Length: 132
Image: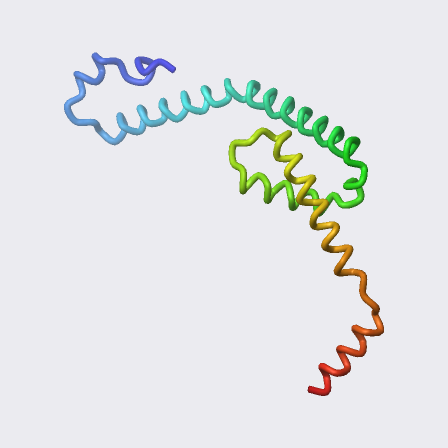
């Protein structure tokens, strides 16, 4: 972006006090140039985003291929990935997935222990709780 296309040094030096019209003209030029510059970078940004999405998709596919036991627990895995990312900023995504796999297995094991209950006992507990 070339500032001289907005206002030249000569124009600036000739302007003692900007009128509203001059100010809006310069401001409009700045806005137009900013938009043009942003639009020029857009193809590069989109290319990067699409390659990043493809990389993450491949990483995810490989993760579930290597961790078949976690495939049916994807919601738990997602939560563990989010937790691992927040607790380990700056770590590579491959490391985050390893941490998340361990955490997901821990959560699944805990849920397995929690769900091993007798529904009749829960009904009996509820009825006793209602009497209190």
